[in-house]
Image (cartoon, rainbow, N blue to C red; front, side):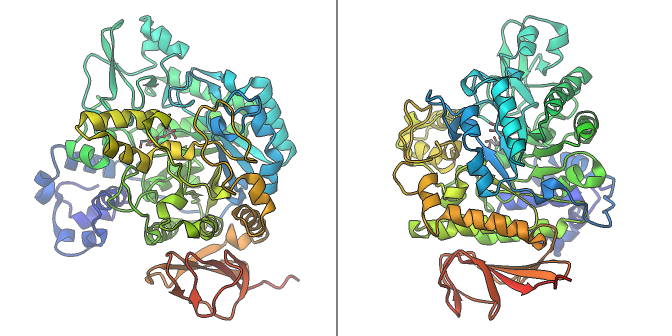
Length: 617
Ligand code: TEU
């Protein structure tokens, strides 16, 4: 246990203390190495508490002391299908519109299963397809057991599932149970004053200072009841009360319903937010300013989170041997181990967001992403992984701008950079999660003005910026830097115009349609297919140890992957400038450049060399 008498270095040595202080220092763009150096390391928490703002030291101590267990690692790595799989996330609304109504649908996905199989995809993850008013594009669920009419019906979904399995692919769904739509029958009954259902949600007589992830207060006043109700996201997404065992049973019934159908598991939306601190205390204003969401420290890793996850797994997932990956914004590397180490029997994987923005930057900041930071974070993550740990590797999803656009300064490097980024996901230790379009080097979209923006988070943020006095052009530039709509553009299959689509189309005739990429030698898509096939043939890239080499050398990333007598070397140029080649006279197995230079790595070069090949007996 730590206390106000504890030194900073003692707090930093605890798993949660390391995560919280690391997150704080990354946000402030400070070098966290000073936490282990005199004089900071010897300062006691009580010496600095008055500089941290009211309540922060106590919150820090509570969080750090909440994890008293130490994780006992496993003796060896247990083989699992989800450790070997290449995952592919589909945002159905933008993926493929089969019936021509301008909205992607399930029949459209079915029509692309052979394409996905040919890419080397093992498991699909569908963003929500349940009945929804689409205030947040399906992340506001109105009926968990009904398919959104615009996307099809339950028979269509069962066909999709069957067709996936027939091709040897798996399918996981997206489960949003931190909140429901305000149009869900549970909430409608609550609004009518039904006490049972009022206790499904979080009603209070007066609001605290928590902020919504989608701008403004996280509380909405409901006239009918004369009460405030919590909504961590949009005003139409009402937080469920997980303290209520009835709610937890409803969620277990929902996952069992789909697991009985043969669904292979779920991605669990903001699942780390479900346990709110008792009494819903105000958030620390300092943390609120730093993390942009006042109150987040009161619920991002709450007191009963592990208990709720163990119950959900034991009753909803384990009986079906189903897979669970949690989306956990704000959770650090060590916290992630407590949620996913196989001894914990909670989640199989989490999405950790630490690498998505470089220190001192947030998603809506305009800046060029320095891949040296990615190397640092990926190596730190690898250092922390024991035999019983695993990790999800990703750069993109439906909530983030395209990685190629975050990194690239000059468009001439689009192809080699896209291939290099894919190469990292396929050679670093962990399971790669690819987001639709990444296989075609998709980039951010050239929206011209706010009339083309659909995302509720962006629309709310734009209004908030205007109300803060920012002029329209500047506010639009801020939205353009981080809008989630960059990832929600329509997939360009063959340059066919999309009639009356829900979002404007920008990518036609640019040579990056799936058809063009399939037909073009040396295309990103063809490289993608080669890499998934190569990874499948090389277990050292799956279960093999990952050993960083020349770790301190800036602008390059070099590591070994070795397994049962075979080993590969991966060398990456993290910049758009030439860098001295470290590896000489080794057989090249894969590269994003056909013609390489003897002495130097070309800009964004990614090359795999053979080091040792086990002699097959
Ligand atoms: O995202 C939650 C989340 O972490 C991101 O939305 C991000 O925090 C947010 O954009 C604020 O920065 C999940 C889903 O992925 C997202 O699409 C939903 O909008 C959200 O939850 C609410 O369900």
